[in-house]
Length: 625
Image (cartoon, rainbow, N blue to C red):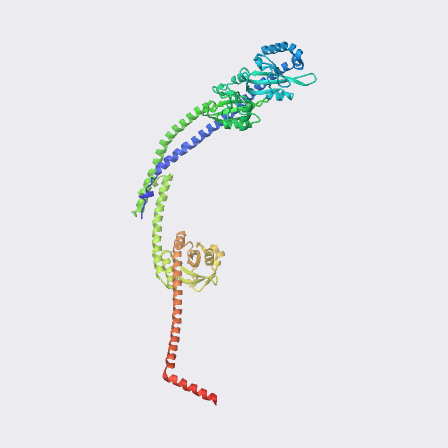
C-alpha cells in the first residue's frame, strides 16, 4: 500500500537545488564567519589581557602611593610622640603637669598649623585617657579611649593605623594614627593620637586616578567595604553581602558611625559578591572580570593589597571601553560576511541550477524506467556527451539501467527455475531438475550435486549430468576440506576457478574427471539452509574462463532454492518411509488380532467346553490311580 502522499510521507522535502544552495552558502560563509569570530575573540582576549596587565600595574602604583602616604603620616605622628615636652608632660603629675599644660597646647597648636592634615592632634596617657587635644570641645579631654583598637595596639608598643572611622564625637570620618610615647627607659607612658583628614589625602589620591573615559580607582577594606571612591554616594557600602562576623564587629565598634535610628550603621551590599569574594581571598595583586549590577556591564579590575594596611586598591574599567575599537571592527566584519553571503547566494543559485538541470533529466529517465517504459541511452545523449562528473553520472546511469534490466531478466529466470525444481517431490527428480534448469541459464560440460553425510563427514555425489567423454561421478565422495568440492563445503562459500591447471594445489580428489576432454574451468557453490550445509553444486567446462562473476552470482541465487527443494524432497522421502513402516506394523498387528479372535471363537463353543471337561476328569482319575 502506497502511503507516501499522506501522513508523515507528505512532509516537506528539500530539493537538491535548495540543498546545494545551502551547502554553497555554508562553504562560503562558515569558514569566513569562523575566521572572523576567531580573530575577534582572540583579539578581545589579547586586548583584555593587556588591559588586565595595565590595570594591575596601575593598581600597584596607586597602592604604593597610598602606602607611602600612610607611612609618611605615621612618621609625622611619631614626631609629636617623640617631643621631649610630651614625654615630660605625660610623666609629671599635679602642679607640675598643670604648669606644663599651656606649653603642651601650644605644641599641639603648632603641630596642627604646620600639619593641616591633622586638625585635632592629641595625646593620651598610658590608661587611654585623653590628656590634651587641640581644637575640640573641652569635654573631650578626660574621655576614656581605652576601648579603641589603637589604644590596645599602642599599649603593646606598636604604632597603629586605624581603618577609616567616623568619629563618635566629631562625626567626621578619618584615619587615626597612634604612636607610643616612650621614656628614656623604654617605658610606654602614653601615645600621640591624631586623625588624618581622609578627604584631602587618601581619597584625593584615589580621585586623581582616571583610566580612559570611565575608568576609576577605589579603596576597599578587609571586609569588602568601600572606603574611598570618586562617587561619594557609594562610600561605606559593601561590595557583597557582609559575613556575619564582620557585621558583628562593625556593629560593636560603631566604625561607620550611628544611623538616624540610633543604631550602628551597617554597610549595604552593592550586589558584587563575586568581586568581594575575589578581593577578600587575595593575598597578592591580580585581575578579575565581573558583572556590575550598577551599570549592567562587565568590568575588568586590577587590584593590589596594601603593605601598610589591610586595604586593597582597585582600578576598575568597563570592558566595553577598551573593546570599543574591536566592537567597531566586529560590526564591519559581520557586514562583510553579509555582503559575501549575498554574493555567494547568487553564485550558488546559478551553480545549483547548472547541476540540478541534468539531474532532473536523469530523474525523468529513472521515472520512465520505473514505469517500465522503453529506455534508450540516446535519450540522454546531451548529458552523457560531456566530460564532467554529471556526464559520467549519466553514462553510469545508462549502464546501470541496462544492467538492471539484465538482472531483472535473470531474476525472472531464477523464479521460473525455482518453480520447476520445487514442483518435484522425489529426491532424484529434484536433483535432476536442478541440474537441467541450471543448464538452461549457465552452459556447462558436466555438473554434479553432492549431499553432505554428517556421519562420514563427507560429500557424496548423488546427482550428475554431463556430455559424452566426462565420467559419471555418482557415488564418489569428497572429504570436507579436500579438493575444490571439499573446500566449498568447508568454507561454505562459492568458488570460481577460471583455470584449474593454474591451481593444481587445490585439484579435485578424483584425479581424472574426463577421459577425452580436459577440465579447465570450475564454478561451485554450497547448498545451505541458513548456515547448515546440505551439499554442493559444481559445474565444470573444458574451456578456460568459461564462467564469470555473473554466472557465480546467478548460481548463488539459485542455490538456496535448490537446497530448500532438496531438503523438502528428502523430508517427503523420509515421511514416505516412515509411513510404509507404520503400514507394515499395522498389517502385522491386524493379522495377530485376527488369529486371537479365531482362537477365542473355537474355545467358546459347547463342543470345545465338553472336551475340556472330559479331559479334566480323565486327569483327575489318573491321579487317583
